[in-house]
Image (cartoon, rainbow, N blue to C red; front, side, top):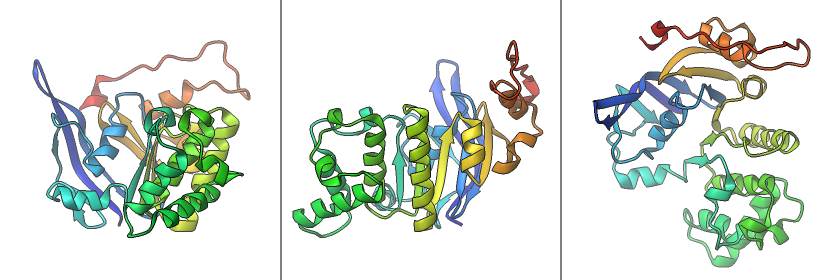
Length: 275
């Protein structure tokens, strides 16, 4: 098992005391594609970031088990975590505009990520960066390697981000809304690319998204979160047959061309979902 999480709780101090943003979350991940869905603020990103210990200093994290490939994340030293972050587990952020260094070329950033885990010359790192750009299906990788982030499109920037995360040959890829800033055509291309890379490299993938149809077609399993809790877990292909009223409410709020509605329903929330 690549990832094991049992009873993960993440709380932050407020004027009224500690407030739990993630509450008693448990999940496992092997060499598969796991989707985590839910509304903004449901705790999806916090759960994934806890696995890399990338939470703000004010966060208070507790868990019965929080392990990556046998490593106890809660007790691991910072030196051990540096061997995990970037090298064995990569994080793809939502928008490359805010994740790429604006004063470094795309190739230099990928080369830096590649060389950081190896003893190699600058020329070897530069050639490796071009090869990685080719792997993420950029047509003219040598030209793109010399471009700055403001000179490339959103879809190309996301491919550069993926190439950076793949540079150390990780075992786990966490993609936090990786296609939300892209149009539908580019979104499909990026997802096909990620699916191919994950299956070819035998990696585990955590895909965080608001897009239920996307997750149901792309992932193997889906975890649904509400107010910091996991309310349902099921096979992605069975998402349309979800039983929890929150998941049903999310699905029913989606517009559809095959069954158009004059007015989309508003979700009726039950306070019992919080308990």
